[in-house]
Image (tube, rainbow, N blue to C red; front, side, top):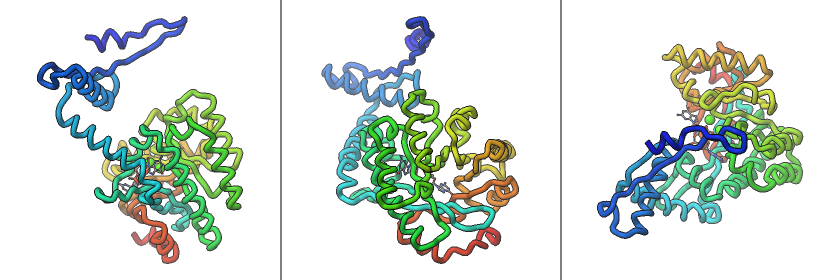
Length: 332
Ligand code: C2E
Ligand code: CA
Ligand code: CA
């Protein structure tokens, strides 16, 4: 009932405003006997309610506390990870479907934790965002990638561009775009060798500084990809407004393309629409020859996925490039 009352739109300075609430519940004396820990537990339950999506409530449970503690420990470890040399950049090839050549790669960060081993970015990137470590990590991934693509260019390979993921948070603080462009100038790397992958959420953020920062990249010659396309709002007007270069079809559509006509229709429609708007399309998560053939038939420009290769360390990527047979995409 509280949630319902709070979610009713109201007027604020002549405009309609919406709020939502996330409620955490801890019960005395079962969950804690002291006020302080009772509030702390209610707080943890509130965070879990937030994670379920807005407008929810959640009761405290002891597993929440265990999880919260594990997260705190991981956060502490993450603060020292970059300095301790535990982060690595893996590269995954992106194949031109017309020629079968590896023409690009995506940089994907990895954390080699001294105790836990490899930690997935899906687990530590959100943490890095929360702890304000994402800019530092992102800048490092960018520099590694810039140095890498510079080396590839000097070897005269087909692979001439590396994509770097950029969280919305990285657009909010500081002057990264300026520093990134300066870094590329300093190492004498054409800006076209770097591609920045952003998500739709960023474009829906109405801050004028976001579009200014994106424009700065564009004017500098950096290309821009819209990641995970089809899973968010897919607000088409943004595609023109922000002059995006590539759409990356989300892997959920690619995965079920060969078995689900609905997903196949979505993937094909994204490709047609992108081409009409003058954008190129990258299919993510290509795992089977069936998916690949459907994508080629639909006119998709690039493919990325385990069918070609998994993300791999820098030196393995060099070996892959040196031995890559472009016909591989035809023979399966
Ligand atoms: P993403 O940008 O959508 O990256 C693609 C993810 O799909 C990667 O997961 C990749 O390993 C995985 N993948 C590639 N091919 C296949 C396939 O054929 N099948 C399946 N099932 N998966 C495939 P990964 O490396 O675990 O990264 C997860 C997410 O973490 C990325 O999703 C990206 O959002 C984020 N991330 C990774 N590195 C960075 C970074 O340096 N900065 C930021 N801000 N985010 C990053
Ligand atoms: Ca990406
Ligand atoms: Ca993606």
